[in-house]
Length: 301
Image (cartoon, rainbow, N blue to C red; front, side, top):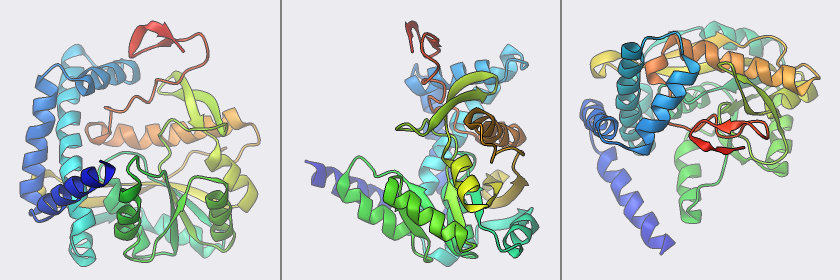
């Protein structure tokens, strides 16, 4: 059954991957808006997250952001097959502008490694492809639910030589080696972590489970950290690669202090393009024991 699912998904990816960017984005926008109009779980989670994280917005502003967010998430959903199926040069041709690339060059010129944090903002697949085309890079990943899909994912993400490493002990050891050699490690920092490498730290004011991996990598390797994302330009014009400085104290020995700095770094870029953030993810579901689950107020964590 899993092989059948893989072939169906792979076929769908190839069909979508044959589309031009404008068509894929228009289709994705329609899908996202339908999911917003209907009483879907994604709409409920989006509304909950925006209300928690951006309480200063009026009800009308929150509603508009919710609608825009789901439209952009739909576009991301349809763009990813393009990033996986298109030739690399065609993908990289979508990058029309860059901001802050000098920060990456300055960091690597010091001879120290660089942890490049790429939140679920804009098109993170294009961001990964772009930086792997310029630097010696490894990216941390979690195996997909379909085992047959893992080889495909590794192949398409590693087309420019980017090394994909699993988020297990062997993979983390490999990341440390690359960082000590002055390379780049790409990490998605805004997921609820698995295992014991986590701490509860504020994210938009709410205590949530946050990875401590980034802080430990920086402590053990002396690497620096920056934040990046591929911002979607209007009307199918392409993307802008943005790089910003991370918040200080991410290497603090106190895991809560380091995790707080990590979350603040994500918050900073999310506020730059809030409509392109993946608010549909249940980032707040893992809270300190005894706290209310915001997605199900009848349950406690």
